[in-house]
Image 1 (cartoon, rainbow, N blue to C red):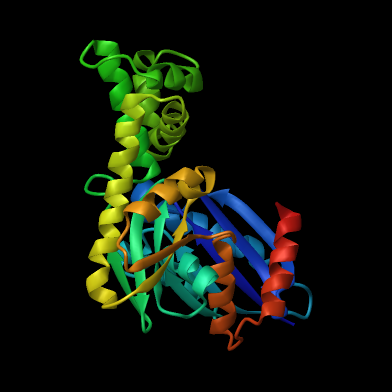
Image 2 (cartoon, one colour):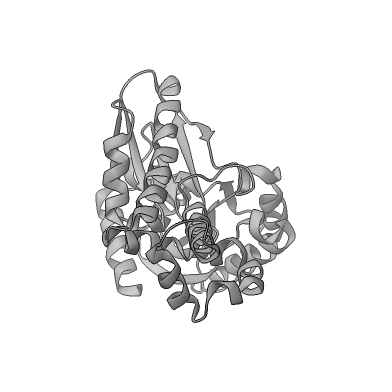
Length: 312
């Protein structure tokens, strides 16, 4: 029996699976994120190795680990460090290490040309054109992750503190953030900074909650975020030179469908954007099997998704 490992990892979580060549799910691992921009490359390598080793240990007797596909956020920024760390520990296993965005493209479009827009803890647009990966936006939270959970959560905190200081008018964001924190935000400054990017991103939900109740500050933050992502679709036009398909993925789109609808309304008219309904790790499955010389059929896809649904 040939077995395969597929990994999808961002700033918040790592979803990894072990499967056989028929799409049968043998084991699943759900752990912390491996984004080296958040935790450093050394810790990212350690976490990823732990995930891979844990799944490799589940290969059934008589089976072999044939291939591994790893889609981890920020992989491109670290010059192959994840692969250099993992490969020597599993000689003979075919491996490919790419950004997690490729999972979204492959999961929805197979190996066709297209792009994905990610809006989770971070944000970016990745396009795949004849096998070449093109990256737009998402240059790390200190530079540009407009429209991401982090950017929205940060703007929510700013609006809450501006209200608290008397620099802006009333906003529901202050009370919603206080409720989520369990204390007034001004009493939780150490917790905010200690929690870092994922913690700040967790407050993005307050913007959607407040906006649904007509809050003006939340509406401004929402529109700013949508505009930031829509810009990326116009920037992608010059790479596709005509109409193109795009996939919307990440926790923000999944939790708040109105965000995807607003983006579709403001996006380039050349972009046909759809919100993915399948888990991102499916793209990793498609790529892992591809590494092993297997083209995923509808039957393999269906079997994996049925097994996966029973695991969540």
